[in-house]
Amino acid sequence: MKTDAKPARTARSRKPGSWKKLGWVLFFLLPSAVPLLIFTLIPMVSSLWVSLHRWNLISPMEWVGLGNYANLLGDEMTRRVFLHTLIYVAGYLPLVYVGGLALALALNQKLKGRSFLRATYFLPVVTSWVVVALVWKWLLNPSNGLVNQVLGAIGLPEPGWWTDPQWALPAVILSSAWKDLGFVMVILLAGLQAIPSDLYEAAKVDGSSAWQRFWRVTLPLLSPSTFFVVVISLINGFQVFDQVYVMTGGGPAGSSQVVVGQIYDLTFRYGRAGEASALSWILFAVILVITVVQIRGQRRWVHYA
Image 1 (cartoon, rainbow, N blue to C red):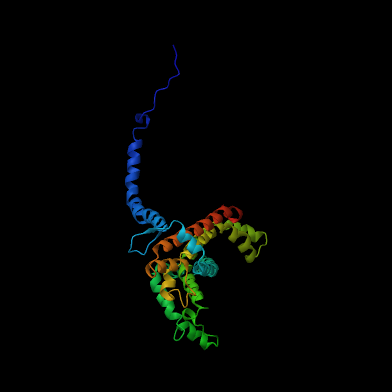
Image 2: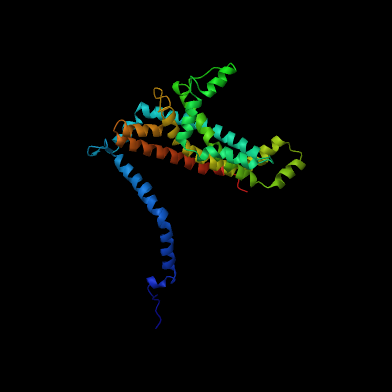
């Protein structure tokens, strides 16, 4: 008599070496997984819990639910710091991309000392932000800074830079773009070197000018590198803090205060850790939405060879 009964699956139905391989994978992941868990995942979950409470870092936490989020969304200062952050990103991103692209195009040519120039332009990237900010704070000193001395020598106005509410944020943008030019240059230079030279030769045969080759060959085939640079630069731009803290401290009169700076002040100056945590999660949501929009929109303008 035939039966359709099938033998039950047991753990022994796995391949003999599968558990051993899984064990080795987990073993090699531990050095990076443990710090990720301790210093990233657990603090993230903790900050979400703190954002639902009123807490001054000393007294016991008091449950307020979504009250911190409601207070922040209705707060004029929250709108101001987000506006300043958007202005920073709008000024920083074009400067760092256009400048990095210009450097990449120049250093992609056959020049003497090309390797030395590449290393020189990349040096600020590996320099501490505190050092860079202090140097630029000296350069942009309204009274005896080198930049204003040069501007005065050629008869141009001498801005107040980080002491003037109108110039404080542009001063931070200028220093930030200068520091990150080398990073953008390296990424775009790698993209340029991946473009086949045959395409340029074919374009020349068709009678295309250098400008036409740039627009119709270089930029479209550089779009994957451009996409990466834009995504990373936007994420970094929304998290700007170090240079603002060192150069302006968010002033004068809050004219250069940004979101992360406000998170810092809410926590350590005003003892409002719950609102600071809520603001950090609002910033996370904004960055997440912008990044998702970019990833979905890349299908229209990013061309992978």
